[in-house]
Length: 231
Image (cartoon, rainbow, N blue to C red):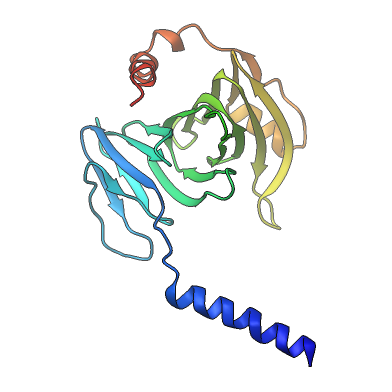
């Protein structure tokens, strides 16, 4: 009798929440910083122009045009920027008891992640590329995935650290073969030779100091400038 009463109370609370409690939409916004981009809403076959300061939802996919650059803000703090010819999918966003989680998939192109912790918040960033699964908390780093063109997937860490898990295809589905930590000032580079080594379950040398040429690139200066302005 008591158990039945407890079950009835739990079901009643869940029904009330489903019917009357307002579920806030994700606090995620897209900013068109340069050029144009297209957005395909989750579950929709239609693609439309991405509008500045539009809200983005779980499952939405964004593709930047040639010369297009966008920014995504999460909870009015964390910023992810994506360069031209980049495809990004918003897989999930969770804000729960100051444990923020941002989960995106970058399908080719390059991105800049500026996620430094506020006084009481340490954002957890989860990001994937063609062969990498990345995780970080309170960091600034850059990611490139040009594996379809020249075979390179690169991580450059400016501040903090990034945990990178190498994922290779197999007959039984994607398989994690190794996890490395890329720290501030370091660069992880996986070219075709390194990927071939991982597919043989070897551990190639993939971490080195950041290439000085990177800090002279327009992409680096552009992102640093926006970081300093808090954009």
